[in-house]
Length: 339
Length: 253
Image (cartoon, each protein chain N blue to C red):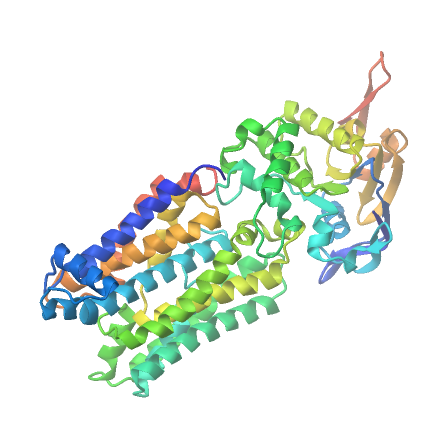
């Protein structure tokens, strides 16, 4: 416990800061660091800045919402991944282990299929994520087993496959000229169309879920022990597991509803955070949130700038995440179980 | 701690029935029996991890089933078979987890909890390991860490599942001495073992369980005999007696 978490938290914060600076300054319309600082300090002090209005527009209207959304989505996915990895005691678990992403995906493609508005599509994605996890939980609870955690994970795999088939069916039925591209675009993950009005439905659930998980951080340490051991230590694992899953699902569904399916962040970032600050959730959750935000900012900046057209985020995270994860597997096994 | 006319088992099958178990503070009770005989099931039932199929368990005047999991954890500590943990928590954090039942839902370890954890690390001679990841410990060190965690719960009863099974010879002796010390400090201790010699060395009483039935119970000197052990395991057993002290040891034949 007493090994200082400060260096690890500072590194995580540095990643976020680097992501923020790059995301604001790099792009088709480059913004100088000096201009960025001038605009920010002018906003803070309430004075008008001497920077050209076009630069201000780029910072506040064009990049601002997208930067905030990327930080929040990255942080949310990393926090949810951290939580599920701990709860299921498994390093290969990601935020969509209980079907949150596949449920959200089905909700979104249904919304696109019925030509609903953007807000309705997001609401459907959000609801789809929550309903999918509730279904998984119901199936997991109905099956009598000695290892409730294993049954939950298996139920998640099965329900996830079913929902994936549902997504496939809708895509098959969809209009290949108008609807299918929109579905594909959404399923690959993007922040390109982020509006300021998207931020509140994202910020609210992410804040609420993260605060609940932070408040439960010590219990979550104990919950990462085998179920019987946690119960013998005085933890009511059943209700607590529901609360933790609900909080992590809230966070995941909100970010999937905003940005579509972005894999790997919730799998890779918790690993890096754990090597930096150790497995104690009290420090792991803040470190993962900072680093996840920074990571997705870097990815999103790359997505905007690497090619003439925007590259879907899910594709970039997979390209970056896969080799990185293989490298991690070789190097960080010591933070998991002993060999 | 006492169980009256217990039937034990899982949702779909009964493992044992008509079992009566008493455990007083200050004594060590060893639970022996062949594999699959219901030892672990009985253990988990007695500490409230499995509900009894019939009968009830009392702690003094109170029914175990009426306690919240926090209340229960402040009375009974459970030491599982030493296992490989998933996460590399430090030894100190693992011991601090024993304090969970003394804090609230959103509670974190207080400085008083840290003092207690430090005292337990001292008691088991593992204070120098406090910062070490639990996953990097040897089997013996893990068992001592789990014992320290159990005592950090400040329980009246300590229940251990095969505490000596995965340890080397020296650490087996170490754990046996610690079990006696726990009883000497006023705890009621219940443990399962496959080795009658460990029961002889650590326990004052033994409870023999075969196919879910009690086949013997009493002071170790009365219960751990050649005939009863042969009947318990359905195998022939040899006995060696130290000529100087008269102390007996058993060997499978």
